[in-house]
Each structure stands twice: as structure tokens, then as C-alpha cells.
Image (cartoon, rainbow, N blue to C red; front, side, top):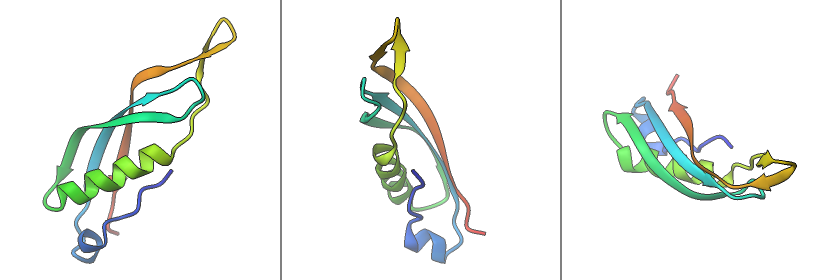
Length: 84
């Protein structure tokens, strides 16, 4: 799912890169999200919150082992916020 760009950052043309690590359950839903990295001049908390919310809305096809769905841990995803 795409993140919502923080309004205050967008108004000031501030971009960011946020990397998250997600744990995904056997149904493909995101169980937990950890922020791994944030590159932003300002509004780091706002960008982190936007990326975390987007990650939690994302649905995945679960990994399968011997045809059975299994949970996955530490799956990384990058969110890039560009103000252009």
C-alpha cells in the first residue's frame, strides 16, 4: 500500500527514504513493523508513521513450505517520498 505523504513535509518539498522490517503471519497480514532506517532532513517521525501505517495495510501472499503457508520475519520494504 502506498504511504500518505505527510502534509507539512510535502508543503516544504522535503523528501525521505524509510526502510521498514515486517513480520508477516501465515495469512499474509503484517503482524509488526520496525523502522530500520530513515533518511530525511526533517519530519522523521511523520515519515516513520506514514511508512508504518502503509506497511500495516499491505497484504502479502504468504510463503509456503510443503504447500502450507508459514509466517515470515524481517521482510524489508523501502518507502520513498518524493516531493516532485
